[in-house]
Length: 128
Image (cartoon, rainbow, N blue to C red; front, side, top):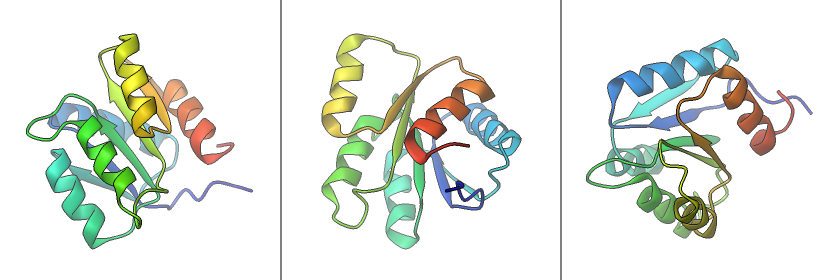
């Protein structure tokens, strides 16, 4: 089954440049329906107000980290099934383990390109 290129995607990062980079990479892959949040708390507000089919979040954010956001999403009966991809500059094993234990769907280490993003999206959503 083909992936719905119009599905709503939430990208979360406290760094505006990174939001723009992720949005542009998604656009290259024909995903246009992208909403942005500047931190975990505002992402949760967006998640409460509308439906999303995928969350792509940075790990290192203040005041709520991507890991805290992931845990909140997985605790919520309404949100827990949403695929969640974590992006981080940290490739430490401890971080990967913590994210996996919290229920992350996949993990991207910065820097990354459209091919990497496409591979991770495919592993989570199906062939793109």
